[in-house]
Each structure stands twice: as C-alpha cells, then as structure tokens.
Image: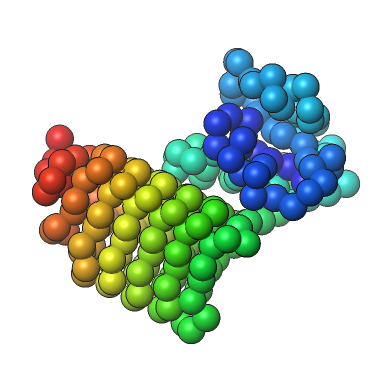
Amino acid sequence: MIIAGAGGHAKDLVMGLPEPHSDLVFFDDLSDNISSLFLNNFTVIRTLNELKIHFKKDPNFILGVGKPSTRKALYEKCIKAGGELMGIRSESSQMGTIDVRIDDGVDIMPFSFISNSVTIGKGTLINTRANVHHDTTIGTFCEISPGANLLGGVSIGNDCFVGAGVIILPNVTIGNSCVIGAGAVVTTDITDNQRVVGVPAKPI
C-alpha cells in the first residue's frame, strides 16, 4: 500500500495502521527533506513513473497529509497514476450506527467521535480526538484538526481547514475553502473562502 505524502501527518497515520508495516511504501515528489524515519525504514517513491509501476502491483493508497489543498492534489495525482483511494478508521474511534454516510478515503484517527446522522465527504481527515456531533455534514477533502468540536447540525463545505481545538456552535454553516484558526469559537455562518480566528471567530 502507498502512503501519499511523507511528512509529519504520515508519522501519525502509520500508528493507526495494523502491523506489520513491511508492505508500506511512501510517495512524495515534493518534499526536499524527507524524514529519516521513512528513508531508513521504508521504500520512498519520488517519481510519477515509479508510482505508476507500483500501482500496477497494488493500486491502493491512503492520503498521508493533512492540508486540504495538498490532500486533493495528491489524490488527483495518484488517481491519474492508476491508484485507488482508501481510508482508515482507528479502532479507538467511536462511530454512530444510524444514518452515517462516510465516503471513500475518509481517515478517522484515534479517539475521534462521530455521531449518528453524519455525512463526511471523500478524502476528508477527522483527526485525533475531534468530535463530530449529530446531523453534521462535512464536504470533501477537509481537515478537522485534533480536538475540534463540531456541534449538532453543523454544515462544512469542501476543502476546509478546521484548526485544533475549534468549537463550531450548533447549526452553523461554513462555506467552501474556509480556514478556521486554532481555538476559534464559530458562532455565525461563514461564507466561501473566509479565514477566521478568535472568540467569537472574526474574518482576518
């Protein structure tokens, strides 16, 4: 299996995968300084040609980065090379069993909570200890950072970044391509392409 991206998030991702890790291969054609953790312990592919060859043997890949734009770009690159997107779900996560719709390639990291009547779009990352409460919808290729709390009825568009420890109050709608800074408390709707920070969250 390919992990697309060989940066910091990939180190966390490996922890959520079952042993043994001997069949893991990393793909990163962007970073100039790849961690010795990967170089010393795994095969690291650096070119698209190598990626295409590997995908002929095993097409499965997981997104090993957090940033929404990079997740989406790596997804598109791997799909064009012949890959098939997969997601992971940590055994320590909790997930509802009624009306839960999780699309392809969603990564659900340790100790996260996903309630009933939740929809999560393709390629989204629900990071460690994030909480997604009932009747919430999250779009594609979003990053919900560690410790974020999305309360009931929240709607988040595509390609959004929700920072660590963010609280989004019930029934708030967030547009596409928004950035919510760490620790913000979002009390009102946010339109597309906004960057907000603070308590309560305000545009910057």
